[in-house]
Each structure stands twice: as C-alpha cells, then as structure tokens.
Amino acid sequence: MTKIHLENCKTEYWETEGGSILASVDSMRGSALLILRSDHKSGDDWEILERNSQRWNWFHQCIFRNHRADPISQERIKTLLQLPQIISVSETHPPEFFLTPKTPLFAKTFPTIRNYIQGSGKPSLPIYVVLLEDLYESKFGDGKFLDFNAVCLSC
Picture 1 (cartoon, rainbow, N blue to C red):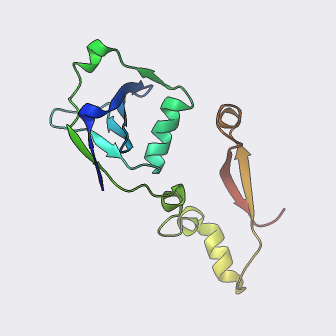
Picture 2 (tube, rainbow, N blue to C red; picture 1 turned 135 degrees about the vertical axis):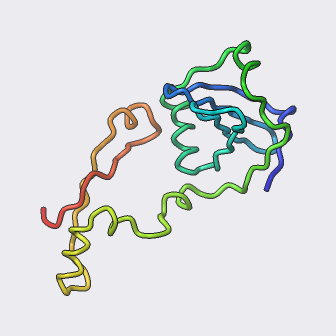
C-alpha cells in the first residue's frame, strides 16, 4: 500500500458526460483516479478507483482517450467536496487480474449452450466466437478493439 500526500501532487478535475466528478492525481510516488458519483449526497466521499480495474480503465479512457469529460474550472473546484489529504493506493495489478473472472461467466450468460455442451456427452465441442470491431476505439484508441458479441456452434 502506497500513501500519497495530495499537497505535493498535480491534481486535475474532470466532469464526465454522465455528471460524475473525477480527480486525477499524479505524484512521484504514484498516481490515482478518484471519483465522486453524479448522484452523490452529503456524507458521500471520494472513492479511489483501483488502477487497471474495469472501472478505472473506463473512466481513464473517458478522460484521456475519448475526450468525453471536460476539465472543471477553478471556481467550481472550490465548491466540490475536498479531497482527503492522504490517500492509500494499493499495489498495481496487471489488467489480466481484473479481466479474468473468478467464476466462469460463460455458463451464466449462455445457459442454452451450457446445456447443449453438458448434454452432448463429449468432453469438448468446437465453438466459434463472434467479435465486432469497435470502430471508434480502433480509430482513436491505441490499437484495434474487438468486442465479444456472440458464440456459435457452427460456421
């Protein structure tokens, strides 16, 4: 766990199209992305997004790659809930840590295919995964983005 003292950090504030407020913190000791949800109520606090998690990735891309967040003016920053003076940032996990499900999603998402495979009596069956290219991400992201769309049992 790394402790970051925010008085020594470069901090930028952003508002997403959905109204969430984000604070991007950068220091010599590490970086963090904190969020204050659009529906925040009094008593709510800033939440630290775990680096490389799916939420962190989504908001990070929203700000720095897709430009779907606007910088917040200094006047408005003064009205926001103050950031904590010290934050604890956990050790960074590789993206695979978050992308590999703890329990298989396939059986929950595709019960018909699960039943077909279980009822076939075979130890394995060929399946074909259908991917769709996210043209926006491929054009403006840092590579070709293929999103999972469907599973088929024959070509």
